[in-house]
Amino acid sequence: MKSFTVARVRSTTAGFTLAELLVSVFVLVLLTFMFAQLMTTAAVITRTGHKHIDVDTQARVVLDRMALDFAQMVKRTDVDYYLKQKTAYGGHGNGHGCGAGRNNDKGSDQMAFFSHVPGYYPTGYTVGQQSPISLVTYRVNEGNPNNNPAYGRLERMAKGLGWNGLIFNPNTNSPYPIVFLPQTIGNISAWSASINNDNSNASKDADYEVIGPGVFRFEYYYILKNGRITDWPWDRFDYPGQLTISNPLQLGLSQVEAIAVSIAVLEPDSRALIQAASTTTGYGDILDVAAELPDFKNICGQGGGAQKSLGTLEDQWKGIIQSMAQTGQTPQGKLLPREAAKGMRVYTRYFDLKIW
Image (cartoon, rainbow, N blue to C red):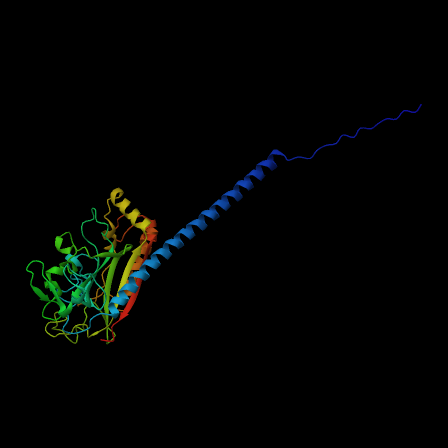
């Protein structure tokens, strides 16, 4: 009887060594980390892009509204304009000529002028008494920051006028002609908020509306018909003795080709960071940040350091904002969150007045 020997073949199963497992886990973790970083970066870029879109949209709305107001401006030499000029009479945009801001600080400009746009009317005016002309005002609110939602934001007011340019003074109930000189906007107590911007009752008016909640800096200057860029609405070389647009000659804005408006805008998160920094670092508030952006400053016999061409002011603002975003410090050496500066943008538009 034959016997058969069954040979048993030992089979071995291939597997990963511990070192291979560790390398695999490391690679998986690395890929996960890279993917997470990629997603985070994409989210940041998207979020930043959305913020810039929001800021761009807001700036466009503000500048488009100004374009309508300027296009319908009443352009006459015998009409008063509350715009910055040489001296601080009752119609000087709070004294920003030659780079000197209100109360000698570097605050935002202010303006008021008559325009053929709709406005709000005082109580008692009937439809038949309402004229198509309004007194339009722009300012960055510099009132009390406490319980003031408009503080540090761009406001617009449009006061409707009655026919014959009359409005009643609430103190005397007597009519004031407000369109033609020598009457000035500064002497119309019923509209004192057009020329004031502080904590006083004279600067408050329920007809003010926040038109630019992110606009914290507002500056303008003039492009004259001879091509010069200045912060006075006339050529001081041709009219060295001129004090205002109505004294001694009634020039009005007849020397002005266009008004250039520059605004600095930031999105809400950046404003919140600045407000938080004011309590943690001791650095001021949004208006202190606005003061870091210089006024438009013409030569005014003061030598260098003045803006002499279009775009110079805007480049200065952008340079300061970029520096704050990189260093986390203001030009005065104060700490400021870099992310707050990254949310700021600068816009400029030129409003043509050549149809004067």
